Length: 349
Ligand code: SF4
Image (cartoon, rainbow, N blue to C red):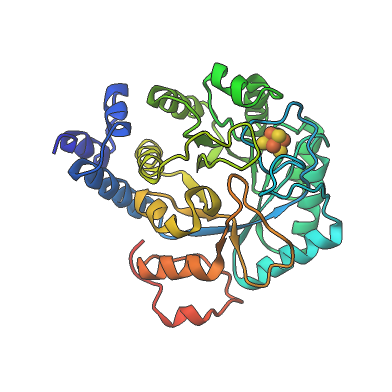
């Protein structure tokens, strides 16, 4: 196998050169691809004993970014497949949703929303989640944060704040996000990283970036000392958006990037949202080294839900079937006794 030597270095925890990482990102299907996945899976098992599940609440889709990001199907009016109509969830709606998530056994929730509120939408969500549940919380309002709102979010003991850079290729960023600035997002990530809160910051892949761009991005993230999570999101075209004819990011490409991220960041939480990999492909994200599945929706979820990146979301029961079949231990709150738990959970990762 061509990449065997690189895999041995990765398993030993040795530094990989840029050329070696690029070789991994270029891996085609076949023996090398299998070896890459097995190595990433092995490293994940050594560094992470359980799989985390994260559900979601979308606070608002009313976004002041203009023009809209070209791939966005989340903001009001962007895609007939997305939410399309403007909404702003009431405190009661958020409360009801997070209580249903907690009851389902899912231990963590992501509350995300569009831009235009200086982070106050995230402050409100933090207050509601932390006053009404014991869920772990990630909030994601992109770069729509300032120091005051971040301090309030931290005051409510929110564990993680997410600001995805999507790509660090400035030209490409400007092309797909003409209403936003990469520098603003980088400053937001730095502000979060300098606070007491964990930073989550991810890659949107398959948007026209090169493998060198992905490598540059992953290396760039190393500067953030509080970085605890990297979401890997494969591009899916949302109908009606300017990128509706851009090709979908293939499953193999997503798996390669997850695996390389795992090799470069053995201890980090790698998140794969069920809508971006596709609910039917969740298994492959875990095989590649993900240890957090996001946008996992319980049966009793009280709100309409459409994934960011693609409308289809993974349900708790379907995700649990996958983790149980793979012999993985899934973190669940103890109040939850799913029928599926008849199968032993305590084997494997
Ligand atoms: S991707 Fe986010 S910031 Fe961009 S238009 Fe959509 S909601 Fe607004």
